[in-house]
Amino acid sequence: MTRYLAAITTGLAVLAAITQAAAASGGLKRAEELFRRVDYDRARRELAADTAALDARSLDEAMLMRARLETDFASAEALYTRAMQSKNERVAERGRLDLASMRYASGDYRGALDLLAAKGSPGSGQERDEGLFFSALCHRQLGDNARAAAEFALVTRGPYATWSALERAGIDAQGGRLPDAIAEYEALQKSRPNPIALFKLGECYEALGDRDKALERYRSLVARFPRSLEAARGNEKIQLLTQERSKPKDAKPAGGGESGEPRTGEAKTGTAGRGFTIQFGSFSTRANALAVSGKLEKILRGVRVESVEMDGRVWHRVRSGFYETRGAAEKDLARAQEQSGLSGTVVPLK
Image (cartoon, rainbow, N blue to C red; front, side):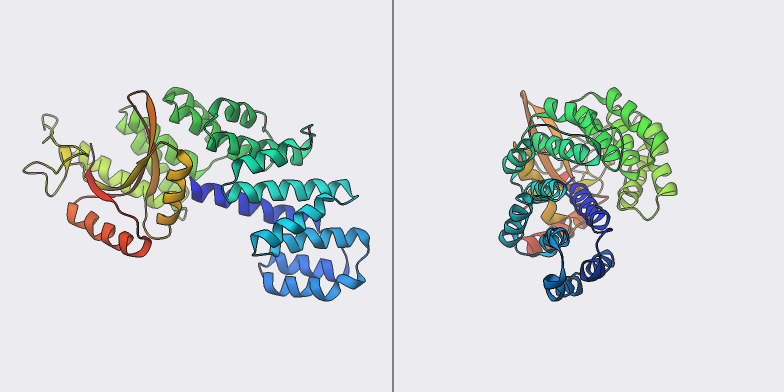
């Protein structure tokens, strides 16, 4: 999830930068074009060289772009704060939203909510949707799923609509309302096909025990979005489910579980022959689980956060990969521990 949200934040920020600088001229326009090309160093130099020639409106625009190009959090925050004090209402609003999204990305969810609530009225159009979207993300990270779902439901158009629909379906899936989640993912596939929705659909059908539909969704994902990050995870799922379906119907589980070593006969294939995964901890706070998964995504494939309810509490497990043998899982675990310093355990899949 962290990877998805980071992609959302980065992509929408770039979109905002491009659209807002379209009316600029001179150095600002050249800087905007360099920004579009992801040539941030040259864009920064262009802005610095041409600042004296910019009029008041262009100076405000330049300040926003400088904030987006700034790599130091404190410096960026200072520039956004200055932008929020601009007499140009659009620049001030843009600065407020950009700073809120930056605080969200850094994990300061309450700080982001304070900024988003500062305007009082949500307004209309894309800026209104953006404010609602990031507000909903913050509420979800803070555990208020009901408030988050209500705000996501208000975003029905524009670039935030797809992500809001995905998040809303994810809330239903996390809460165990799998039929509702499936209906939302299926509706999203019909209107705005998305590899994340297809993968989540497969997981929902798998959780309901419908392996045929799960396989159908995973195969559709691989065929329609072969270059997506989800396609690799889909292929792993297809392999596991195909192996499971090919086993005799009267095959019995060998026993064992997460909390102990596998029993005799499990050394190669794991519990009921379904293989192994690596678990890097179980957290009561989802934000902590996402922070750990974010570190691991740079090292391992198939990193995910699985939410489960135990004794009336929801726990968020950080897991990675699907392995046929314990040895293959232990090899990746050793590599992850060496590169990240995080400890983990190889556990058989049930």
